[in-house]
Length: 276
Image 1 (spheres, helix red, strand yellow):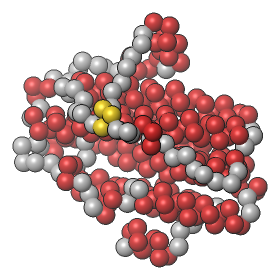
Image 2 (cartoon, one colour; image 1 turned 90 degrees about the vertical axis):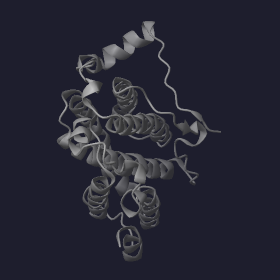
Image 3 (cartoon, helix red, strand yellow; image 1 turned 120 degrees about the horizontal axis):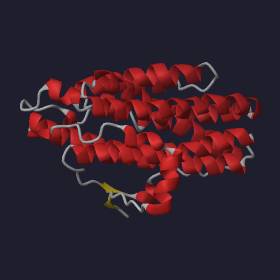
């Protein structure tokens, strides 16, 4: 059931513990965006973009919670479980940063979400297969895609606040992406050929969910005449045409090619379907 996406903050002991674990958020230069220097169109697009970032990071909290449980169920190495558990606090911090960015620009935009369908919950035969699939979907695909595209946004952002927001998020995302490779080092030797082949099918299914970014870019990301490119870059926003090119390149370079080196591949027909 869909409901408005809203963030609640408790304060007190909960905030104290969270700040102790993730203190860097408060050091960002909040309050430094002078909205009077930007057009209404540019602010609206940036508000919508940062709202979407907050939603995606909240989805990452749910996704890594599923990954963590799968790792426990399959008795993955304890230090790997501990590493992954730390990602939940990272993602909560990212939700806060993106939400506060939207508020800096005039407030978040209304978005409806279905929290019951927020994270993938694979129905596989055993815990090991669930862990394989979830790590592939979350770390190897979703986090690699988010980190790769955000890196380009970061590189083109000129205002110091969104630049530091991206920098903080990307610092964490690099570990989230690396976790997939670390897991596969442990898991691949335990997989048979049938499981590796199944993961190729999972990979194709996961990539289909991001293919619309370059196959049919959303018109919502297209900049109207009233919003200049300099304004949009300052606030951390990429227009549709640029994002489409970046998204396609990131998927090929950071997802498809690295996974192919360990035998997790998509067929030529699937590749043509995605990129042809």
